[in-house]
Length: 254
Image 1 (cartoon, helix red, strand yellow):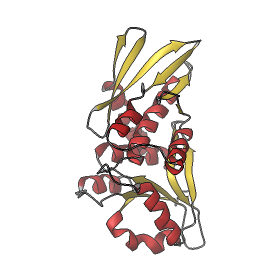
Image 2 (cartoon, one colour; image 1 turned 90 degrees about the vertical axis):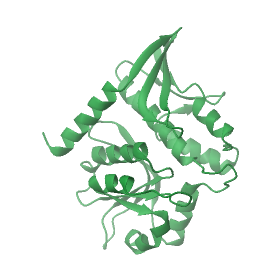
Image 3 (cartoon, helix red, strand yellow; image 1 turned 180 degrees about the horizontal axis):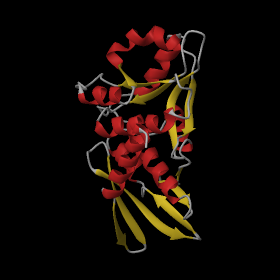
Image 4 (cartoon, helix red, strand yellow; image 1 turned 45 degrees about the vertical axis):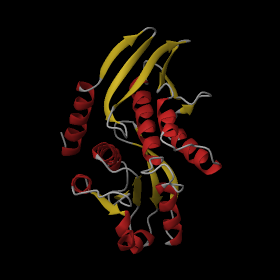
């Protein structure tokens, strides 16, 4: 077994061991080891309905953001939300729940996709203060445009595990540089670093051998410390602190 296979196997073992299930009336509550922005375990709900399995967050993710002063109420923000959800095959219901449907065959994949969508939405719309008007993701896109970086927005790759992974920007190969794959991390912490590392581990072997991964870290209102950048580097992901982004302008624009 290769080093990569061993790491992925240990990740799945950890995920299985730390996931708990309990029945609540007609639903099954699934408590996962992934943490939300309050450091609470993310919970999703499962129910058999019309011959399919329905997986949902019961509206918690978007309701929690709204209660924190982050309303998804502008065309730009609604478009960002839709793009993020579509990348994982997740829908927003009329009452604001994030939901997907599964068969017995693809249940693990759909469960994974819903959890990744919840993590992505939490990070995309995370704001340190309720009155922040500009989301970090939007600022990154504007900076890349200003730097004349050519990119494709919101690209999905299927990894060796057959799970789908979404990356925020992909800069194509040029005569001077290989393919560069970027993920924006608005709220750098253990979970977002781990999610990014797993996505890259699972994806890198199906990409060109010289492809490079970068994580753009929001350090505008907080000190990140060494743990997150060091963890990313250990998986061959180059961390780019927002405060030091100009050091990488030429490398990304090449």
